[in-house]
Amino acid sequence: MDKREQMSESFRLGVLLAITGGFLDAYSYVARGKVFATAETGNMVLMGLNIAQGNWQKVPHYLIPIVCYALGVLVAEQIKGRYKNNTDINMHWRQIVVLAEILVVAVAAFIPQGELDIIANSSIAFVCSMQVESFRKVNGNAYATTMCTGNLRSGMEHIHKMLFQNNRESRKAALEYFGIIASFIFGAMVGVWTADRWQGARSPCLLRFSGGGICHYVCPGRENPGRGTERSKKISIK
Image (tube, rainbow, N blue to C red; front, side, top):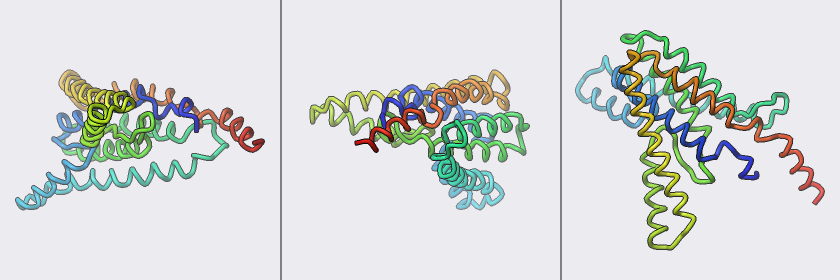
């Protein structure tokens, strides 16, 4: 596949998705009962902590989002398997994933705060896992849009290659990784600000309908199917 046509790996889309990831993580923590909905390591730690302390009533508070996150991966893979090579619709499978994210988070945004936070957090965990599963690379390098530990490791690895192995390509990769990290932090800042300003619950709509909508249009329909067809013809002729 021609990288120029693979907009789903573009840095600008990675930045937008990282902002979304940081936003939703901060939102779920600040406005939805201090749960990290976009990445489940923290929830696993908090679940283990509450089990150790005998707070069994709090275990579902963390366990259900973890399960929903796992289910999101399965659904994303199912969408990919069903629509990746489906020529019946003029839409890329990643666009379907992003549209699903927009709809689910829009519904979650209107769920009242309090006892129903677990539903909102589980919904966010579900769509964020779909996002992570569907958008794995930026310009050919593996990355994550809802967590940054791996991005930090990869960024420092490329800095080492740049400094000690004189690898020029690593300079660009390192800048992209730290750009993604900075975008994630910025998204978290916006998430806290909007949660405070708009009383929490409905704030994700602001980002999901703008940022998510842009994601929908940035990803090209079916990875430019017409071009792919032309390319296939050229290959077959050769």
